[in-house]
Image (cartoon, rainbow, N blue to C red; front, top):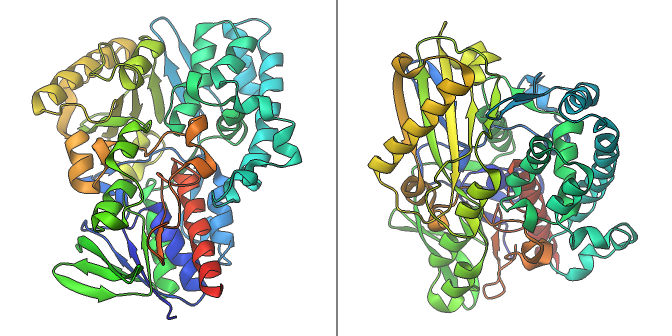
Length: 487
């Protein structure tokens, strides 16, 4: 068998896999439908303003460092990393919680809100740290082939944490609703309600409070650039503006792809594109999962995004800001239980130019706003405009400043764009949620059960949604391909 690998898509998981496979001596080519690499982590530049179009939080710096270390490199060989202080602000209707860059600062803030809460917080984060060690250094490094991957002395003694929710765990220790929202927020990165997310996932709270929030100078796209550069150094060939229309199968084996009307042969095909879309590139008999299967799954939210250039510096905000001045529970219901456009949405605002002057012209501010919404909603320009008005009015009120007249331009991105630009199932933004019944071996498989030499990677398979898991997913699938060729 030969060693030619074709990878569909160029997001974090695809770039990760390409590097690991090239290091093992494979002849790797990436085919990306858009004009630039990065998948959902592309960059948008306009009039001197630089925006990360997708991921904007740099958490779990150890995972990024570990990735580059695997190739004898360091993150500092490619980009400058700064720890943010404050990590972020959370705006409530009557107060602002500031999350600092150390546990001491965070405990002091918790004490301000709820007397006596620092001690239970330290205990909670210590338990979260133990879970982090097990999750990141053991569980997520397994390829989701068998339920036995979850069975170890570490997980057996924590079995109850897989059947209790993070919401139960937090509410047992804290009574103040603001602190509860603060501690339930990180699991939203996993794509499900805190009440549906196993309490074992408190490791996300350690990622937040224990490891901190970081910023690569120039934005998250610098990580994509670094991975692209590493891939090229390793001999990977990258083709942008190449839309794959079919995965070719012969005698039950993937033999290549059809792209821009041409058939390109390969010994292995690996898709880092949306999993559901990837299977539509196969003839019906070769698809593992039916439409009914996908329809029953709990998907992480979609998003309504706004990229805004302001002609002045903004006041009373930090680099990352969460606006929790409305009901967390109600908004979650309108995403997961009764999908519809939210009445009073929570939202997130990111102003990277506050800490990184390279991301906006002098005296200006780069603004990125995000409203989590249910996937598959009606998406019209009228709705986008309506929701921008809602959040900008609340933003002005809560931060005590007028900004509407300082907007130089505004671009938006929503469900239809996720479908059009990323072939995203129902326009989801973060993949499939990490609920108990969608964890590890219960997620869509890295290796096709119906087509030999066809593999998948990314946020719909293991380990799950998020940038660090995507890096790990690329590593896991590359190891499977190497192992598969040897057997």
